[in-house]
Length: 569
Image (cartoon, rainbow, N blue to C red; front, side, top):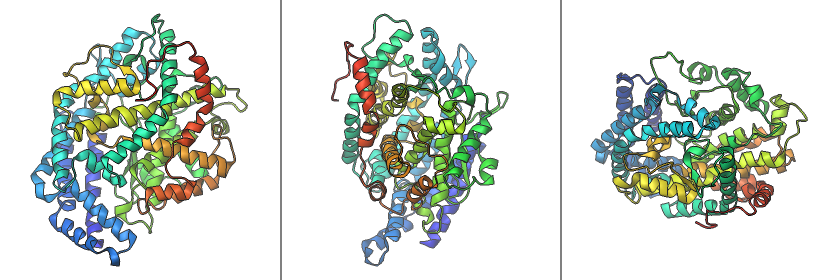
């Protein structure tokens, strides 16, 4: 297995470097990066999907009696990687890689425009958060969706290529392949996230009703709509409504906007160091792309925050466009969670092939947990981001959190997951993409488009993950459940604090607990890790318990109001 691992790491690193360049420097008309991505991607695919590697792994796995658990896991990983690049359909794999690269360049090289003027993704997000003129909001929202028009044909093509590639090694479809990484079937995954969605439905139904009436008031609309118009919401996909609420005594922007973008990231590092993690390596600061592209630059970059483990060793980087505000403060702490996860499972006990999260959701859970912890009142007071002893309304603070975390569940576990399941597993017809997207948004999120959105559009494709991180969005829903499960344990068993008012800063026991989860990477079963560390298998109960006081309050606020979402889906 050592020769395989050595070559795997070499090719993985070359491909990662090429992808990094393609995501951080997109120059119109320059195909240099695209060619490098194509060449390195094909080399990686050829190796991982080689017939020889597949047959050798299968041969070893026929008799596991002489194998350690770690060896079995590595062999299974070899076969999983092979399924996305099988040599038996090498021409198809090459075509898919080329198509994926073209889709990525088109997505992140897109020039968003409002009234003929170029705007950034940050400009769009800021306008949807702050603008109160509904006519202007509509312009901004529609501009944010135009990118999908040019991505539709590519997405349909990629659907076919991705499905055919994994079918060559026995998977039903690409969605089935991605789900199998959890040790689950498609039906089992849909049942799991469906259960989570349903458990949180009562809270979401109250939030949806509350938002309809409060936003109608804000925009001075007399007749409250039955469903939320998409352009009313402070997020392009309606996945986060938290900026609807400003909690008195919790105005973090008043301080954060006086800081530099670099301070935001450095302060995140300080948080991790305080609980026992090491400083970020010098290469992180030298090689990352952390701040917005200068206005006069002749290139663009991927506008979606991400973390990168370039060589499965010590080269860790982050791609962000940090600005000094509360949203980027939380995001920076989140992204550093991924970075520290990489750094922790890069150790002598975890072979490179297993340097991943316990499952994909764990990576997001770790990042989101630290972003969440960094926004709690005692932590912010300790940091001097809000004054000590600030008076704040606990219910309003809970409401703001719920408009982020609870509102995200029907988007992630509903709209996104059901759409991608329909796309890959159910072979959704090409002339029904937008129809299906808005059917699901209405069913799960209670959101409708401002006007009829025909099949010229592909509004789903405006979401980054649909194009370049496909059939995995349930990871995020599961990560929020894990987040609250871990946070509940940390608050009650380590800090002995109210889960709604914690301060992780400076507590080395919190760091030890998190590092003990991070250290094994993917070398241990994900559910086993959760049960060992928290005493319970995956459960939404801690999340429900956390928001229980808010649910009671919302029911009072919504008395006499019209509910339009059914209690059950």
